[in-house]
Amino acid sequence: MIIVNQEHYKTISKAIKEYAGIVLERIPQNRVEKKIIDQMKRLACHNINDFIELLKDYNNNSKTMDSFISEITISESYIFRNPKQFEYMINQFFPEFFKNNKFEFPLRIWSAGCSHGEEPYSIAMVAKDFKQKNPNARFVINAGDIDKTCLSEAQKGVYKSKAMHGKIEFFESKLGFHIGKHDKNGNCFISQDIKDMVDFHWLNLKNISKLKIMQGSDIIFCRNVLIYFDEVLRKKILETFYDYLNPKGLLFIGESECFSFPENTFELLDNKGSYAYRKSGSK
Image 1 (cartoon, rainbow, N blue to C red):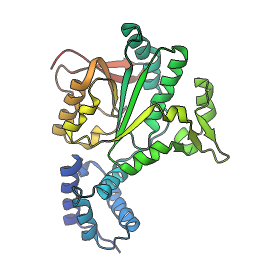
Image 2 (cartoon, helix red, strand yellow; image 1 turned 135 degrees about the vertical axis):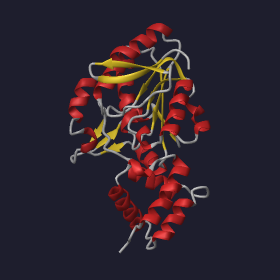
Image 3 (cartoon, rainbow, N blue to C red; image 1 turned 90 degrees about the vertical axis):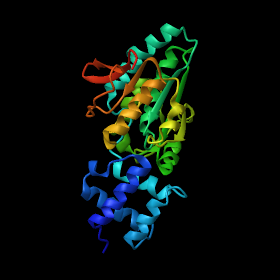
Image 4 (tube, rainbow, N blue to C red; image 1 turned 90 degrees about the horizontal axis):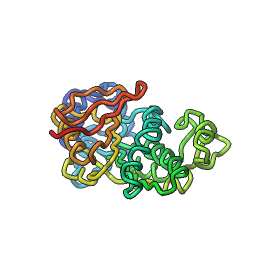
């Protein structure tokens, strides 16, 4: 029987915060302990101290740490989660953006904390829909996550019916094109042209200097991620998003997330109960 005592918990908490900035206390302890046991079984690791050493060895090999972080933080994700945010993009932001730049520049979108890829592929689908009606529109879509296994799964683009909420036909009727092949079990294999629209990257949001990859973005999605950080790191990340968003760029966070934003950075947009934050003024 694997027993996780408070000393083990404190050591793991310290290592995770040092590596990824995540405050373990933000996550229910029983969930954390269950995921520790699950990870140890997968690794055939019978000693809790050996598992802790694997976590702490992230400078040499971060695979165990990355996978564990993904396990304890991942929430339910599915295609077109928070659909009003996507409606706002395609009905208001996309037309205004391309009207203002006369289709001279591509619209650049980042999905930070993309998990298994449901979010960036949803972005790609609405971008494809818009492009079909506006052939001169161009999009650059990037997505990142801390877990390389999640990224590998995302690149495959295979989703069970649950990730579609059983509404594959509904989405296809709304979009006017097939989003992929389906099998008899309800699984969906995202079509290659949609997969080709997204570039995936390994991303640790705590490494502020590495976020420069987002520079020049017009939209950043970072939904249900910032809740795991302390106020100091969250403020640094939000300030970095502000710096790397283009003028009037958008930031989408989770619907249930409510933070104090750095002064003179973002203004709240309320679109029929769905919220976005637009870059404004100067810090």
